[in-house]
Image 1 (tube, rainbow over the protein chains, first blue to last red):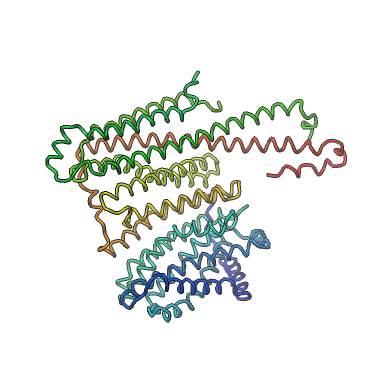
Image 2: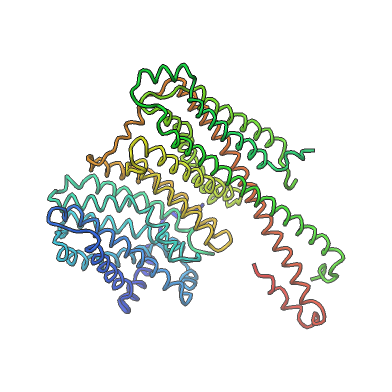
Length: 228
Length: 105
Length: 255
């Protein structure tokens, strides 16, 4: 097991920039994230009755379930476009390590999710009358999508080569992401219920710990994930 | 020489089949050393024999699970061994005489 | 060499079976009946060993996976697979026995306390691991991917537990008393439990070795099939046109 001492930032950014450029041209991923999350909002609206009494507590659950499920779609898409037309083979032929490619993809996915959240948060606030436009929630959201992007990119990279790839990703990704989802929901709920940093702090700590642990794990294991 | 032990699964199977009724009988016979059971039951107001069917189900399901797995695995092993034997035979038959071209190609 | 159980394993099997029988006697005859819970408490002697084995299995799968990534030797992958598959079986049995035990004691089949939540998530994770192995294209790449998933899963366990634990304490009104479980065990009960853990661990180890051998046969069979394919397809192009086609022949023998 070779561990590269240093990952060159230039190539990482080049991979991320390629994804961003592609996204700016066809807007496939961010639009799908938004539409899908919006639909989940609508469905949840029927599934659970949000009242003025429970909306601040239950609302964050709706928000993060929507983000988690939508991110599965986005992550899958980000690797399927590489697989179709054998773009991944081209990427693997470039003189950079597999880990570099995957870090670049992670950065790209993180930016897509962040872009979607910028629109999703105001929409959610308006639809459910739960104010998530707070600095504490932004920090929670950043840590959450950082974790989702890191773990998700790893699993998307390995599911894209399997049969039934659209099933493999959520089946692998969602159980691993449980600590992030619990923390995101609970942390956000503490804030929307009227709490401040102190109330959300322990959840933010779990999110940060998850992110650090899985970023390190990702850096160590990325090299094994793409096919020879 | 180890003919009897050629199929480990059958032995485990036999032993475990014995276990289930053994457990059931033990349960049916008021469970636990009689004097202890009587003593404890005397001090207690709960019925210690309630839920025996749940306990029975727990042990049954566990043994059935172990069994089914061991059975399936050993069956797979046997079919594969047969296949391996056949293929080996095929290879040894084919190699020297069957196709004269093989050696060169 | 192929097939028959070696004498060592036969001895092991006999000892294990004897131990298991003895354990059953201890559980149902020797150990006293628990005061509060009654006979149903005897479920402890099977539920706890299953839980213990599941934990050990997670650890072994992760360790074997690390070894596989370091050494690239296929035997480590086989160890991980054998342990994971049997581990999922034991985990399933643990969840089922736990639910059946919970129903009469807690009056629910399931409760979302930290241990149960963590176990359920772990179960899904290892089922996903086996699915990945089944769905991945054959070859070393699949083994590497599986190894990475196993390692990430093991890393995730404490995080899931910590988050689930905190989540529960955040909703104390929903806590259903697993405290019922924590009433002290008498010394006979402890000894029975210990013997039971040893017996079931021995049985589990036997099953893992069984599964490991099947895995090796699978690998052997795969190699033999490749040999046979090579043997059958290569000469097929050989006759008649051999003189002209010789250069193009090996293409038929894919991987």
